[in-house]
Amino acid sequence: MSKVKSRKQIAKMRKAGRVVAEMHEEIRRAIRPGVTTRQLDAVGRAVIERRGATSNFLGYHGYPAVICASPNDVVVHGIPDGYVLEDGDIVAIDCGAVVDGWHGDAAFTAAVGDICEETARLVDVTERSLLNAIKTMVAGNHLGDIGHAVQSTAEGAGFSVVEGYTGHAIGRAMHERPEVPNLGRPGKGPKLRVGDVYAVEPMVNAGLPDTYELDDGWTVKTEDGSLAAHFEHTIAITDDGPEVLTVP
Ligand code: MF3
Ligand code: CO
Image (tube, rainbow, N blue to C red; front, side, top):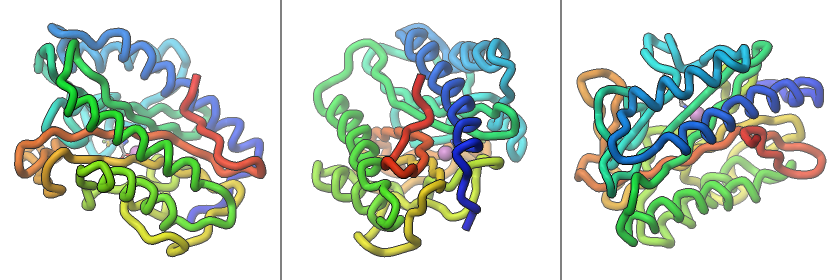
């Protein structure tokens, strides 16, 4: 269990979160048919440099980029490359930044051009599962409430939750203990405390929940080739309830 963060420390994490949010804004504007995921990584890099931040992704267990870009049936950890985004694709963008030793981590999934209605529903439900999870993040509630909110939202809409990858506490390191599962039972697991900061990150598949990893050691895909969406925020639990730190 990581230690709770002070108000001062959370203020520092807010700065890291703001850099991540800025990466999101600029990458979102750059997403369109014809753009490669490597170009989106360059947009993220420019924001990190401009803000005097550093990347927590680059070099993490040898990871070669500052963002993950995961199109279509890639669930998470897609490595930016020469893949050209096409009209009708979706792409999940995961970004992180470090300011003064404190980490931020957040992801969104965007439409490339026009996407079909059922694909839009997958993206919307995945985002809603995160927003519903955030609502539960009040001191005295339990970690299981977060997972339950994600699971009930996604499964209630007919989609499935990926089990093998989780959210995590975050602070002076990107990944602190405990993990934050995207499935859970209400009232179970450790109690949420004022000063806890968690990266909550639902990964939702349109088809079956099963995934596999490519030989590159990173890219995670849906076993059945169905589409997947991913959203993430870094959230602090304060006296006044949840505060999303990865916002502009
Ligand atoms: N946001 C991801 C996570 O929470 C981190 C991406 S893995 C990395 O685990 F290697 F790119 F850093
Ligand atoms: Co994360």
